[in-house]
Image 1 (cartoon, rainbow, N blue to C red):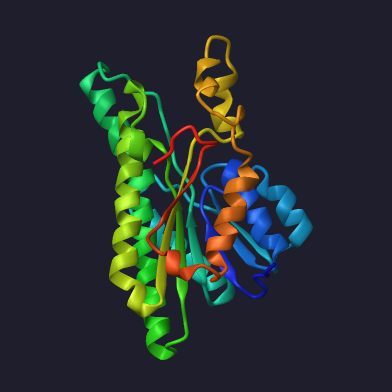
Image 2: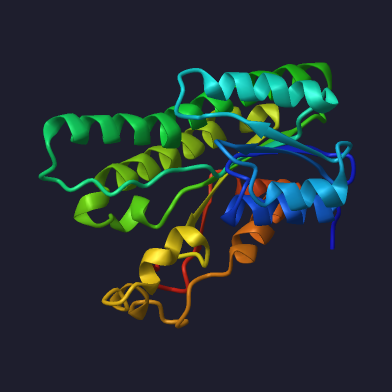
Length: 257
C-alpha cells in the first residue's frame, strides 16, 4: 500500500517487544531506523545482521539519565543527516505499592516520570525544533511523532501502577498539544493507546492466578505487537495527517471510549 523508502526514523525501546516489531516493519517498508536500547541490543542484533549498518543504527542510550533524549536526537541525526519521524515507545512500569516507604515511592515516581515523560518531552522538543527549521527552508517539509501511551491514561491502572498511568496521561496531553500547536508548520503528532500486548512485558498475565487480567478482553487475547507496529507505520506514512492529535486505541475492545 505504501513504502517509506529513504525515510529515517527514531524508535526508542527497540530491543524487544513493540519497539523491535515496529523497527522491523519500518525496515521492511524501506526506511532507515535508529533503534534505541538501554542496556542490551537484544533482538536488534537480528535486524542488524539482516539490514546492516546502512539501514539500521542500534543506539545505546539510558533514557533515565537527564538530557538523554537530546543526546539521542543528536546522535540519530548524525546517522543519515535527516530525521523524518520519531517513535516514542520506550517506557517503564515498576510495581510500586501505594503504601511503599516514602524513599522508594519517590524514587520510582521520579524514574518513571524521567523515562516515560521527560525523555519523551526532550525528544519531542528536539524534533519540533528540527522539523520547524526544515519547514522554514521548504514549506512542503513535514515531520511526524508517534507516541505509545496506554489505555491506562484514560481508564486508570492498578494501585501499584499509579505512576505509570499518570505518566501515560501526561504524554497523551503532550501529543495533543503538539498537534494543536505545530500542525501549521507541518508537524503532526499521534498517540497509540494499547491494552495488553503479547510481549514479554505482559508475562505477568500468564502467571497462575492472573487469568482475570485477560478475561476482560472481548476478543479473548492480547493484541499482537504487529498491530501496534503496523499502525505506527501507517501514521508515519503521511496518508492520514489530518488525524493529527488523535489517539488510536488497540486493546481488543477491553476499553472503548
